[in-house]
Amino acid sequence: MIETRGLRKSFTSRQGREKKKIEAVRGVDLDVAEGEIFGFLGPNGAGKTTTLRMLATLIEPDGGSATIAGADLRADPGEVRRRIGYVAQGGSTWEESTAREELVLQARLYGASKSTALARAAEVLEAFQLAEYADRKCKTYSGGQRRRVDIALGIIHAPKVVFLDEPTTGLDPQSRAHMWDEVRRLRAEGMTVFITTHYLDEADALCDRVSIMDNGEIVASGTPAELKREISGDVVRVGLTAEHVGAAAQALNSYKIETYDDSVRLFVEDGAVAIPQILRALDAAEVPLGTIELHRPTLDDVFLTKTGRSLRES
Amino acid sequence: MKLLRDTSLIFQRQAQLLLRNPVWILVGVFQPVMYLLLFAPLLKPALQVSSNAEAYEIFVPGLLVLLAIFGGLFQGFGLIAELRAGVIERSRVTPVSRLALLLGRSLRDVVSLIAQAVIITLLALLFDLRVFIGNLLLAYLMLALISLMTSALSYGIALVVKSEDALAPLMNTVAQPILLLSGILLPLTFAPGWLQGIADWNPFSWAVDGTRALFRGDLGSPDVWQGLLIMAVLAAAAVAWAAREFARSVR
Ligand SMILES: Nc1ncnc2c1ncn2[C@@H]1O[C@H](COP(=O)(O)OP(=O)(O)O)[C@@H](O)[C@H]1O
Ligand SMILES: [Mg+2]
Image (cartoon, rainbow over all chains, first blue to last red; front, side, top):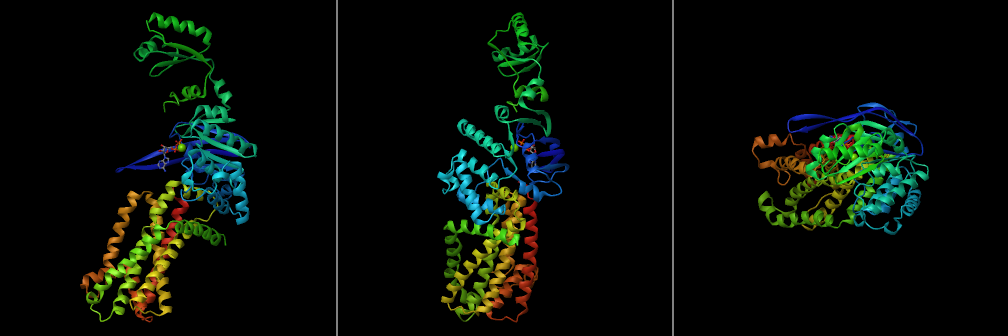
């Protein structure tokens, strides 16, 4: 449904007199199948939005190619626009308009007649449980309601593919869960959903397949289960008081280790074998132990092994 | 036809939002009316003319051109608010004509300017201003072209600078010399030669001269067609440029 090869984009930003070149996206290859919820996971500044804006025809790529829903991005952006929906990260409603007005206008911009647009707006308002507020000005909506209007605007023309840029960022847990349901419903209606997020649990729970992006490049792709399986073994997390982190890292330097403010994380072959060894090593170094826990790798561990940083920190 | 349809969609939306906000009517009409009332007693002696009617023939066209210029130039602020709200980006992912995104907005500005101009003209009639309807309509055409040009220019600049903080000083820098050097409020007849020489290079000075000729009833004056032509060419150029900015604007 979406295929990109070597998609690139750089910006020049001016800092005083100096011009700096930022390579926001450095050669992205993606293959998204029809009917998938595809996740783009990465920290802020990774280049997720820039990639999405290229695919949505909002900015022109510097290089590379892409086919979206059968239309060529470079050769026929107009056709791409007709086949996709795009929901920007920062929202898209005008405070003084009502949701219904916005939806009708959007449908008409996609070419619908007035009566079709009205009918379609009513349908979408119902589906997103917005009917109750439909004729109130957008400035009176809660964050979650506004976000639902944004998504309704993005799919008003029943596109084949919809791009959602961080649809749950800034939402409370309940609205987030609600949004996940909406995304699954869109997929059930036959849409391919391309979603970006910097939440690990979201990528894990919601997405069929994930690409992890960092610094303009894709560092790993696959189903969440596949990605986690790539990290062989287990993760052991040792909780300590802050002043002992250095000593613990020293004592455990034979392991693949990552240090934090009040803990260290170790990547080991087999947790059951490693834990007694770890305990002995800490004991020998006279490091008092806070907690010790063993867990299967998460997507954060995947990110960590690929980039050397934790997604939670960046 | 798609262009017409898209333009009218954007126009309707913008007009609807404008009408919903009554502050506009207050500022847009009240302020020029105050100008008319406050300047009225000063006009006759200052312009050294014999009647109120003659004074208004000079002052009213200047005031209208001034409104057209400033009304247009400050429309960019509204667009920056729309950019920030994500409304422009949302429009740009649809297949809507990029020229329509500009024209729909600019035409709204033209229509609201003409509405203001009609109110002011009617009021000036109370002060003994007399002008032929045909000439008046041509004068309105001139105003429409001016406002089309300045609003398109303002939208284009807004898309380039993307922030109020940059737009405000820029617009003031553009507007001040235009205002001072066009003889808009008072004609430059009495100005020294060098000042008139500079004014010749100010396109709005031509527009004002043309509009004054129309209010005088001097349809045959070359000022009329010269002013209209200059404004038409500049308006077309501004529209073409600003529409391109709508097509490629980044964020
Ligand atoms: N219009 C722009 N001009 C200059 N730099 C930009 C622009 N848009 C994005 N960038 C830069 O490109 C990089 C990637 O940004 P973005 O795609 O927004 O990342 P993400 O969505 O993953 O947080 C960042 O360093 C950002 O500052
Ligand atoms: Mg982003």
